[in-house]
Length: 209
Image (cartoon, rainbow, N blue to C red; front, side, top):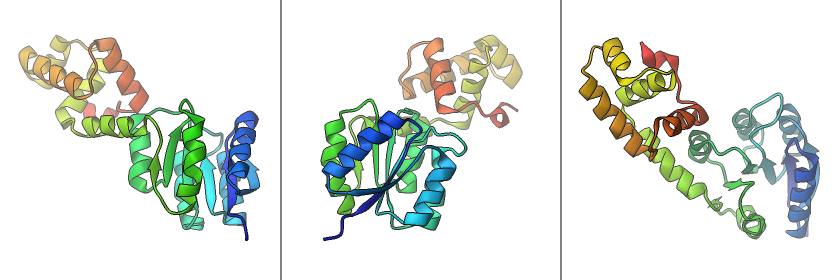
C-alpha cells in the first residue's frame, strides 16, 4: 500500500525533525522539508503531497500567503497549521479559509499525533486551545467601527478626553464605548487593551479619520 506523502514547512530544524518523526510514526512518507515560505510553495508544487504541515512565521513569505498558494497549486493537499503564533485574528482567518487542521506548538503533541490519521482520512480538526481562540475571534468581530476606532486611538496613547475632542463626542460616550469593547474582548486594563490590539493587528490607521 502506498503511503500518504507529506511536506514539512518550518524554519526550525529541530521542530521539522520532530514533526517528521511524528508523521513517520503515523505511516506517512515525508518527501520534503522547507525552511522558508517560498521553498514551501515550491516543494508543494513539485511533490503535490497529501499533507503539508505549515508554520506561519517563516522567512520570505508569510504563512497565510503560503496557505493561499498551496490551495492554488495543490488544492487536494491537507494543510495542517502547526504554529507558535497565537494571533486570534490570524487563526480565525485560517479557519475560515479552510485549514484542515490547526495546532498550537505550545499544546500537547500527543493530540497532534493522534489527529494525523483522522486528518488524512478527511476530518477537520482544531487542536487544544484553538476553539477558545476562535471564540475570542468571534468577540473581536463583534466590535463596532466606532469601538475599533477608539481602540486604535487608545493604543496610540490618547485618553478619553483627547478621543472625545478628536471625534466630536462626549467623554461619557467615549467611556461607554471603551467599557463595551473591553468587555467584548475580555480585557481589564488599558495595558491589556493595547497588548491585544498590537497582537491582533487591529491598529488600522484608516479607522482613525
